[in-house]
Amino acid sequence: MLRSLYSGISGLRSHQTMLDVVGNNIANVNTAGFKGSSVLFQDSLSQMTGNPGIPGDEVGGRNPAQVGLGVQVAAIQTNFSPGSPQSTGRASDLMISGEGFFAVRNGDETLYTRAGGFTFDATGKMVSADGSIVQGWTAENGVVNPGQNPGDIVLPREAVAAAQQTTEATVTGNLPADAETGDELVRDITVFDADGAASVLSLTFTKTDAGWDVADAESGAAGSLTFDGGEQTGALTLDTGDTTIDLSGVTGYAGMSTVAITDQNGAEAGTLTSYAITDDGSVVGTFSNGATETIAKIALATFENPAGLEKAGGASYRVSVNSGVAQLGEAGQGGAGGLVSGALEMSNVDLSQEFTNLIIAQRGFQASARTTTTSDQVLEELVNLKR
Image 1 (cartoon, rainbow, N blue to C red):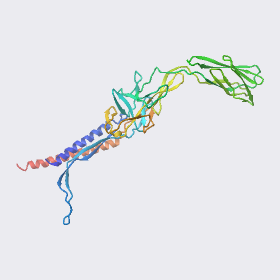
Image 2 (image 1 turned 30 degrees about the vertical axis):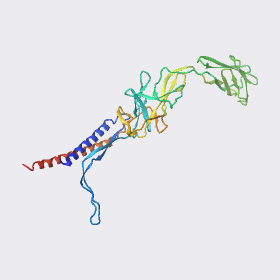
Image 3 (image 1 turned 120 degrees about the vertical axis):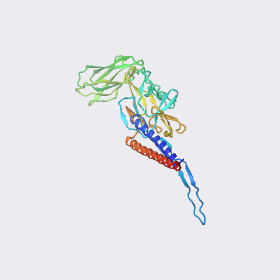
Image 4 (image 1 turned 180 degrees about the vertical axis):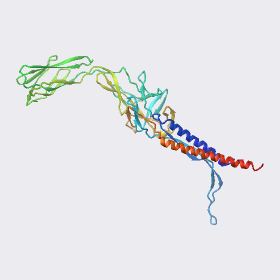
């Protein structure tokens, strides 16, 4: 048989593979987290028809004469360049801005993906579209330890923010310098004990000839405020036993009565009301008492050779012998990119390039087919030599 016949066949096979790859890229142009692939060709073995000769004194050297035996696919490479962001507004939709992969557990296997379209299931687990569970670290008392082995990310809907005892309170505003001696002003604020039980802290301000006296009837703590030109001559602090009250910001100008207890650091116990995901992967819960606390942190995986990962379907990858082991760490550290909440990374397929590749593959296929038919015509002529 003619060598050109087999060369044409190899061209058909190789360009068919290129068409398959391009077609898959185009089909996934709107797949979140998809990474396009490209085909590299290389020539096959060449048949020696003339050996090279050694140059001598009387005759020059000869170059080898070889006839190629066709083409073959050298590699199908994945392009891991970033895709364009698409805003979704959903807090659980995540995009990696930079290098790295989300680690997700599918049964006993850990897979890696750039598709961050996550939700929370009925048990509070953070899952991908196919039910794989996102991996990371669970916080203990609001503190995450990335040195531990990662586990499932869970949003505990029954989480409770502990009550905080009131230990400090702040009084600001103005006491009127032109008030009558003996006038009283009472200011209240709700405070909390260690169990979260609420009570009222009440301060009574009484005008004196020298300024104002202030007292807490519950604890018996008392002190005096004196002013010079409206400014306090000392920084008064009351200690009620459980709470330290800072009155250093109180002024004493005439005509204004704006004194108030403006702040205290206690809170009752609170239930989880919402959550947000920060750029370092922290899942931060907001509670009904106004407290915020880190619940978990999402892990990102990096690889020495991401192109060596094996596609596992569902826009996921698994470790191969040439990818290196997964290095799990925090977003924004160790070469991993940061996270963007409320957005997804779209496919990095460039349609204009893919349609150009489609034309190239089609013409290459047609040319190889013509080589095959031409070789067939030559064989037909040979067969017809004897009629």
